[in-house]
Length: 123
Image 1 (cartoon, rainbow, N blue to C red):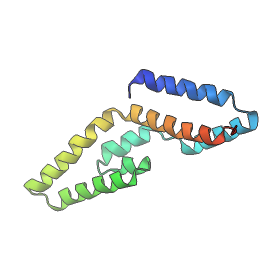
Image 2 (image 1 turned 120 degrees about the vertical axis):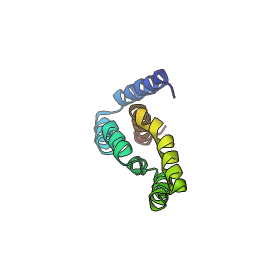
Image 3 (image 1 turned 180 degrees about the horizontal axis):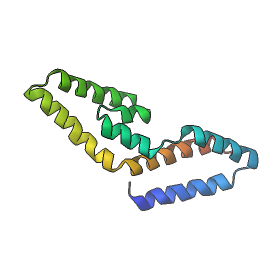
């Protein structure tokens, strides 16, 4: 998703939050503190532990397990195949390291859109 679209979604979310009744808005901000993820934590988990821990951080358990299993297989078989498996994981994960800010922003916006949809009064 391009940056202008993310900014547009973020602005729409801010507008929706500002239109909430005060008690609901307070609840929204409480949930926001609990649910938003930190881009630096994501980047560190990706950079230092290319074993998929950053996927667990975002709640993507299956992807994290697959990534972790591939890294463990690669480390256990440090032969030609093991090195290729490790390199494969690194090549797949490296772009996510460079896009960590955008990935986290998109994740946080999606999570908070879901929260606001739950909090908005039903008509």
